[in-house]
Image 1 (cartoon, one colour):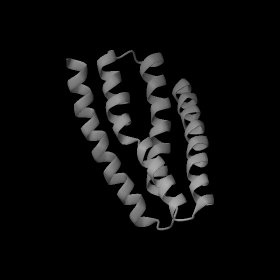
Image 2: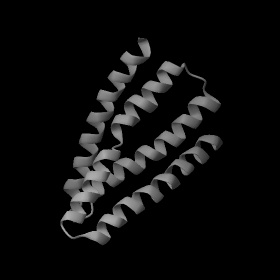
Image 3: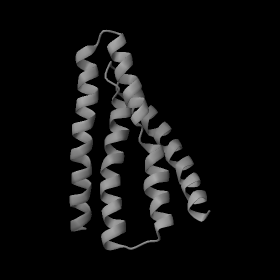
Length: 124
């Protein structure tokens, strides 16, 4: 029960962080490419790699707190479903190359970001 409550609280915080950060990026950078979602997902992937490494290899915190951070906060902060919806909407608008760049670029950059986070977590 404790882990569930912590995940719920952290999830609310992650959703609010995503909303604020994504809107901030989107207001500053206009264009067809959904940069706000891209930046949120890549920063979330980096943080997941970094924090998971730190919290399992360096600082052994309770699984409840680790789950709150990784599943709750970062799970709500990142958004696979929005990535998919924005890609489909781009395709519906005829922006096939931008849609492909969105899904392929996000996937590649996300994997690189997780690897970078893990690498940084190992040296910190």
